[in-house]
Length: 260
Image 1 (cartoon, rainbow, N blue to C red):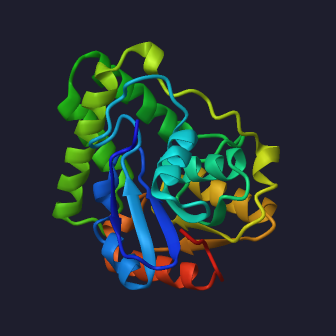
Image 2 (spheres, rainbow, N blue to C red):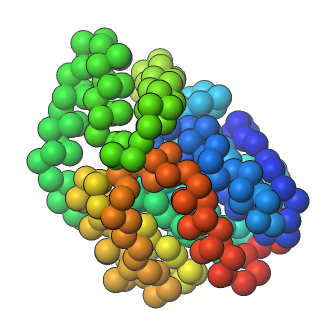
């Protein structure tokens, strides 16, 4: 299947935007056209089980991304990933060598052995309880409260409510055998990612995601860590214009990202 997606711009470099696990491609409304105006061809997609892409079979998210890029004729791309989407971007870079020209990772998840902390464990337990009880409204609010920082306005919070509820509806309706398959990416695999990487962390985020950014910056040969003192877990929704400038600046610093 082809992932639901949008394309803007016709520049020589292709940038793929990968959403977080509580969002879908709508989370990039504040950056999608800004990056196109900066001279990139920009693609944003809904991974399986999010937004407009159903769960129709077993899958590996990174391989779904590769198939989408094949359909679009984009051999080498820059990837921008938020949280879960950042983890998918890292897995794509490992599973499809040579196709990632740069990675911008906003509070990214990653397959590294770090202690999640009691706050995140308690969140997971409570979310499971609410979903088992069929209380989607409470499970949505639990996510909104944890993942959005103090800069998020009412519009951002409402958008996350809609996106998270849609994800719950799609994923809870899918048969267990259609669950995503592990990408099989290890910590050692990550250290061989040899492209420019911007690892963004946020001071108001759950601590483990700051630790991921520090881990990446310390072990990937061309990675640097950028902490944001104002942000929570979803800076693209909390300060859209500032995040667009941050991404435009990073991508503009990487020569010859890709050719479609």
